[in-house]
Length: 275
Ligand SMILES: C[S@@+](CC[C@H](N)C(=O)[O-])C[C@H]1O[C@@H](n2cnc3c(N)ncnc32)[C@H](O)[C@@H]1O
Image 1 (cartoon, rainbow, N blue to C red):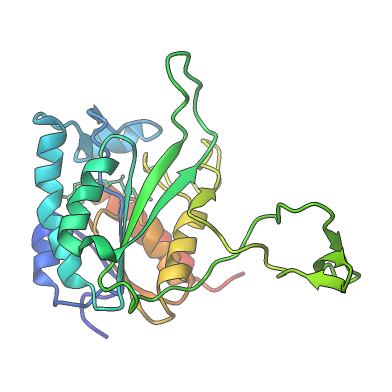
Image 2: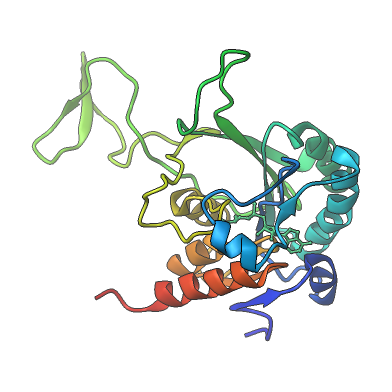
């Protein structure tokens, strides 16, 4: 196994990515800062006092953020093999700019999806429609050669659905029973996955932690068992935990010591056999 695999490093991701060999990451997921122009302290005030490195304030505004991210996206492109895929997790602040940037780096024809992750948490607004989604952009290194496994879930939206004695869904038609896949419909690019609540057992204390269900879906869709999954803004390590859970290797890093401590701890617990 390559020496960098199954490790999580405390480092700036740019020199780290540059040190890795071309084509070594089958799937890359990154969840960079969102340009919120705030220090990220919510729910993790203690950690932030000990380790203030995750500060999402950009004195040069969006332009400075784009200049920061560009060389990192170029590195992501270099690190993917022809079968690989990159997912970039963003919100309304930078998604449009990064879409154009990725079109330039990867080529428009390699765009796969603009995934809308919708959730219900947070307040309502009286000045605009409540902002209740993140955007995840997916690009293949070479569309057509990329790994992709259809994912199923949720409920069928069809009238007159019945279930047989084994729980299999079907509709009665003139020609008899028309059976549907028991795992649910093929998923689209709109994902309804609950945000981690403040009391969720999954919570690690890292303020921007994403749900494991979200990362499990990405890992299962765009990699094979044994593949290498990378997250170069790993935070609490959700993507790396998902990789471990589904039998993939992983490589991760974060600027923050505290984030890496949490990520290593989560991955270690994930590898423990079920009690
Ligand atoms: C939005 S959070 C990631 C959250 C993660 N997806 C999770 O589930 O916990 C972004 C992370 O990027 C890290 N970060 C910011 N700049 C970085 C850099 N240049 N190199 C490595 N990590 C960086 C921050 O410390 C922060 O933990």
